[in-house]
Image (tube, rainbow, N blue to C red; front, side, top):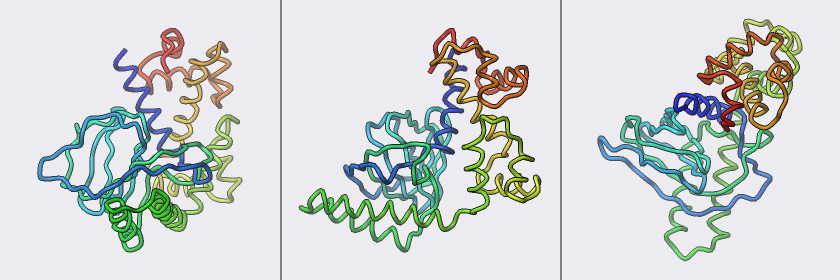
Length: 269
């Protein structure tokens, strides 16, 4: 049971990091923020935070696990911890210095801002200092929130400008059509590139092969359908893009450590 839960958490964590984005069109509430630095040997806290947390690392490496998966945020990178996930200090850190902001917002597959990315210290760190000053003064909630909005806007614009546009096109095409039994050759032809170039660009940008990403998309959707519907395992496998049930079954067991039927019978979500 514990192994199943860990494997489920691993795939779910991947899906959040690759698909779910912060919506900048829906209301975002600012709570608080501050600079933070670790001493030698210090580890992250064990917690489940009720708010989401933006982490902006400007020195060292901040490390922790989230739902059992290790997360490393290096100097010049940001990461958003979503509310309700389990963070633990079971990963060794490297005396990080960072700015954190507690907030609440909506995360959707059609959102605007990536869960993690890079940030420009020259433009963003002064805004963090300004926000920190406002927090320690008698500034209004509106004044503090406006500065936080400027931080989010800077992060979003910086990452959209620096992201490989071809890699993003490939990712968008996968996320939109993965249920249609597409293959890498189909996507490569649609984008007028070779399959080898598609694989190289995607892996360099996202750190995972296109085939693995497609498989994870399909498996997570299948897991959801197994838990939430009464459709047969075979019907679900074909509906999420697999053309062979035996391939689906083997991939599911490898990813989650159990059969599709075990997920359904135990109603694991």
